[in-house]
Length: 225
Image (cartoon, rainbow, N blue to C red; front, side):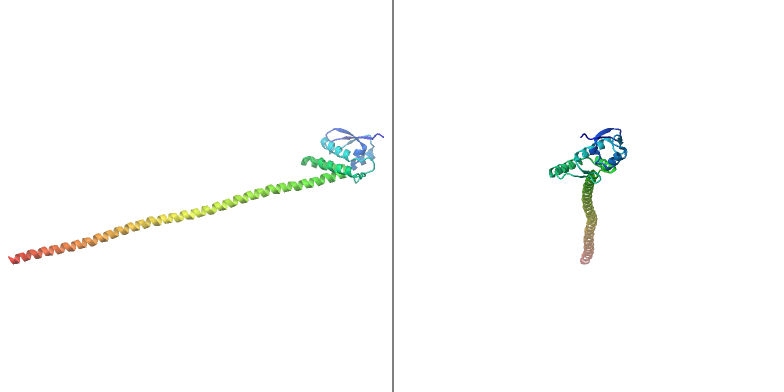
């Protein structure tokens, strides 16, 4: 028996003819079909064509011939291999950029496709955790870099302070050395002066004695005559 076809129109005006068994995975579309009939075009004002293509791809892969609980979105098949294939498909399906994932999640919410909403919401949460971890990792690396810079600065500051202290001590020592040298020079001059003064006094004393002796000698010579 040929499947009934439903026309879906995206927000940017593109139309897609899709089997009814595929589109009724959306509770929103199922309600519209039941209320308006399957022959009319169903306009989806909040879903762009590129996102609608992804949603249709998901629904086609998940459609099961037989009983489908549209409200819960639970497949009737119990085939283990098919289930594993479906899990692999889901894992590949959500390997998209963050914006596309967000748009698919929003569309799944508007169209009430429970399985797709659960899948994209879970993936969004995981990606958000990964994103937060990356942000934390970057900030941690920045913190470690800044900490290393702070330590380098503290080391530099300590060494600079030590250098300043040593420089001040060196200047004091140089000043002390200059003053000490001046003192020693002056002391040497004083000693020289003292030596000169002593020698001068000795010389004057001796000179006085010589003069006295000369006077005495002259007087003696006169007395003898």
